[in-house]
Image (cartoon, rainbow, N blue to C red; front, side):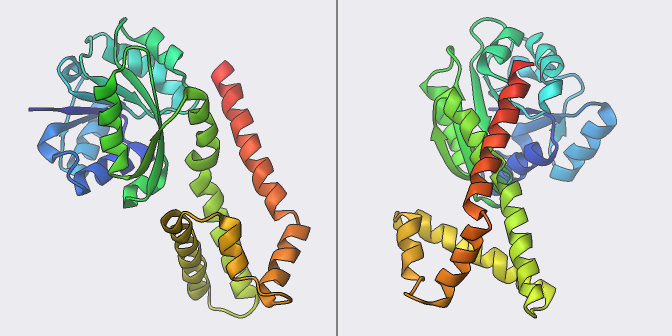
Length: 266
């Protein structure tokens, strides 16, 4: 039977696990997880209805090893798993930990894949960028696409593009939550109840995003459909542009990428 060993099951690891279980990518009996200590491993395993690993030795036979720990923990966690000479695909979701860094922690020939997912994977609406190490083959790429494609959308890209997408889509939910909160504040400011304003803001962003994806049309074309000459929508957009909305978003993504690059050089 194929098996999956998950090292670290925090917010992102848990989102991937719950999403894969919900969509039948993995079965509970196939999954083992290992946290930083036995108590945490037991607790998380009970929460998801899967098994737990005491020391990660199952990596020797696991079909897939998901390395889902924080970047600073990767070297220690990877070396512990590497000691068992993993034969399966090693998938890392740690930001700013490069393929060459990962390769240095594992035996030569280990099949390594880097993935930059985002938290909407937990509700089946994620976006994941996939980049592969030198030893990884088509089977490993397909495995990553199967896992993350089931949780939303997945694209195979270069490693540099993966880092760039980390600053856009990886961190993007954080930006979006701020935008939803700001729009909800605006709704409250003009007289709406808080919960109504939050729901309206969230559903509007969700619906607009779905229109972009399903129609394939440029966002500017869709925007033009709702901006009548001399109308209310263009008046709102003009004020937002005057306040620097577009520049703020561009600058934010650039700052995120710069931080990621700095972390990778440490």
